[in-house]
Length: 373
Image (cartoon, rainbow, N blue to C red; front, side):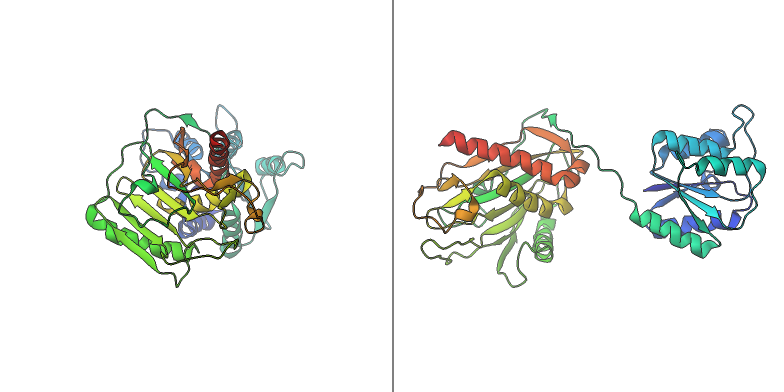
């Protein structure tokens, strides 16, 4: 995050020299006129350009207003403040305590602190107090969430459906598995084949830390020449009649091109699984969240989902699993429900909007289920 420091230097020399190191220590990039260096711009243009580039604006108010521009009659600081206000930037104001402002600064203080349109400020006596206040402001700052906007696909996108990956461990028959895929749109740099083995270990370790796998779960951690994966399964797992069970089958895998996938068996009894849109939204959101640390190096991504196999899946309240004495019981491995890639979104948009993406996928899966019955 780029943080612009705005003030005159006279009367605030130590504060202006202190803040850049603090801002860098907080993981952000400070912007101030002392650091702009030689540019093919006037000093005024460079400073206002810095405000245009910034993500957050810090205003320090001391005793001095500063020299006024011939054309605007405003100081550089007030012009910067106007630019930040016009851009709608987050503005944090810090006023030095026990100062005697000059008349022009008195007017600027009145404008900044105007009750109807002005802003609250934090007062400080020294660098220690200023550092605490700036740290609190920046740590509490939350960048605005980018808008959730979908665009049409410009070309078909290949989905590495789980059942079509022969190297992956597969579940026992008749277990409905929910899967989701995040797919790069633009061409990306392929991961080296030699790196896939290490990546599979990282997938397993991260999934344990995130609670997707238990710390003691036995996993298949492996890779071939195109995929890396970590999968939990138990071929000997069995459940009793009408017991609510979730088969341990679950996993994450990624392709060399950056495509990401996660899957998990749906709860079931001996009659199969019940699904509804609300439950699928929640499950898909969780699966997508496990993939966000590995988002591909692609400006845009598309998302797809499936329930495969779905021959014993029925629409209904999932809480009814284990509490019913009749229902549809299917056999065979066909009849997958798929929400194919239909649009694209900015990669940076995915993490803040997992719920919206999951809701779209869930609605499409339920629509397909209804049309197949």
